[in-house]
Image (cartoon, rainbow, N blue to C red; front, side, top):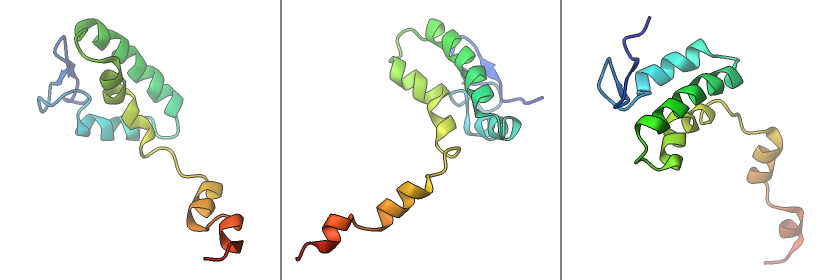
Length: 98
């Protein structure tokens, strides 16, 4: 059991007093839900709903980034097609004289 749980209604971390989920809890959640990103999103989505009721003054976008936005940062590898297109110029660009 983690000590980095949310302290409601202020939504700070019970372990380090940073905004929850704190960096430590994010690492723990990534490990707990490795290979199950949808389950992680559902888990955090339930907390997001509760937080919107407690922190009604905060913009919805900020709360979304805080509770869910970080889950996609490291979890989404860049598809090979996008990696190749970023590394190589477009065919049209290669054929045009400079």
